Image (tube, rainbow, N blue to C red; front, side, top):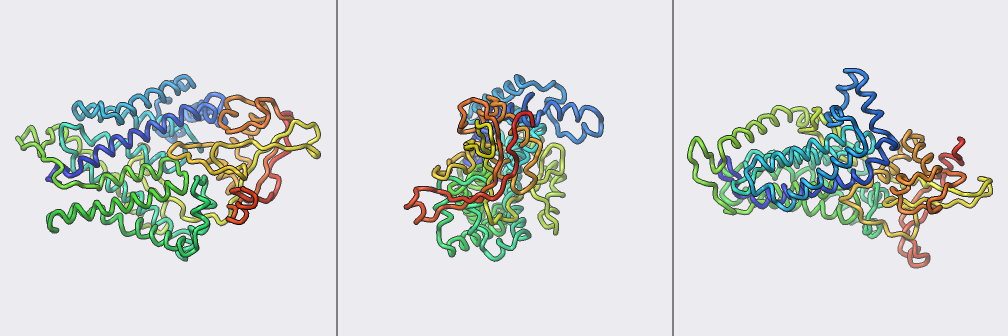
Length: 491
């Protein structure tokens, strides 16, 4: 760093801008493909009904986060326009076109992505109730102030990215230490690879590794999330440590975070959470003497930063100082909040996940039949795109794409299976609703209406090596109970 200009972090700036933009492109694509059948005019939880409810009183309106659709009536067509526009702007940022102009152009592009995607998440209800949604929003807001290629990145903005990464990693570490005993007795990852929401192609192999390895995994996780995040701020000690020691310490800390996140990418599917963490970690990767700021010419340039831009980025830093108090206190609170926002604009949030690890994998399997008598019927399963079903199927690599229906299916056994959206989902399957069927991987009735439908719970376990060699299955399962049904349309 060189005063107000983070000249050693040009690589970090490029990765942040292009990486965050790429994640926005994926997020808008996910919404384009899934929002309408889940939350559209005829969705499982129609967003227009939420907007009408919020608009019925001033108190309810304040409960709804900012969204374009408060001022512009929601329609599925307008949702498509918003998603396509977001993808175009994001793609331009990935290529680097706005960054060729002055800093105000990429700023406006990122702020457009931020508010455009917030307009979707604000009416996304349970299907958008994930921590990585607010993480993407906050990262997009900060990326708006990284500047353009003709000037160095502002130091204060780079430090704000370290603070975001610190809250993300240290918050997750503290949630685990305060959570289930499995994180303290080092057994958590003996279960996690098998019971995580959406396993990936290598999850079974990871689960079958020796128990001692899983204990090492947990220790490594604790070090990476509870110790390493403090080292991200080492470059701020440049006045007291010989160069380039602070820069190296911060870079090593970032590489440790990246390495642990790559392992999570290889062994699971957590939408863009791990990918976003990797991108954010590059904010601390410094390359000495990567560039030099333009000579200051007060009052027009300050360490190579135009005066107006210096004022704006400094104001953003002061804003964050004011907003970060609740998140800082939350990190050390006895009752730590997980994935909590303290402002309507979802800035300076609290993060954290997997304070406890489920020990058993229960899957809700949806089955249908065309037979008249459900008691003697032959039942056929609907296949989901990501979640386990077919015992022989290798769990697919989905992330960073987000399969929202599949994720909500994982939560059903942990709560009430009769959630409103789920019963509506079953009714849409009985009606062979094409948009709903498009969310699935396989329809056993090829577009025909089933006569009956039901939901059954099964316990799933990864097949051991001997079982795989004998039966060529990746999973074994045993039926637990009938959750819903048999039901037909008149019901």
